Image (cartoon, rainbow, N blue to C red; front, side, top):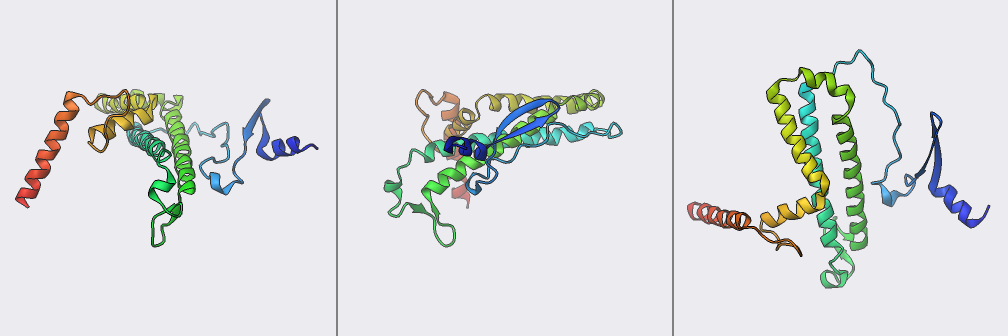
Length: 207
């Protein structure tokens, strides 16, 4: 076996299911790549006797929306962190202290792992919420609950299109950063910043 074949055999494994052949990169043995888990089963074992309760679809949707928001902020953080040169912030290539010291190169890898892990979670949650086995429950759901889930899923679709871009807009609105290249702060955003400053001033004055 050639060196190339040995490398291929190490990183790829063949999975056969129901006549389907899939080639999946196996990174489960690489401790530094914990965000890439082993592939899950291709099918679910759902009993026909199980009754899906429509009221539990809403919290799943809320978890999905929050996870997508987290994904966007993690990706934004990683994008910004990779632009920080180690030499400008650290004399030893590390950050932190008192038990929380990490090499900057390791931190970059951790951000990648976090992004990959959250991305996989959001894919699973998205598929679940839109799975056909929830259809009967959705039809039985009250109109108010359906509208709430619909509103949440509209947020989900908006964030899902560009999680990092959505997060950057949120961060700009928070006043933590200047608008990125090609992104301008709107009058509304500027007004929101002024409101926050005024609120903080009043809070400090009354303290």
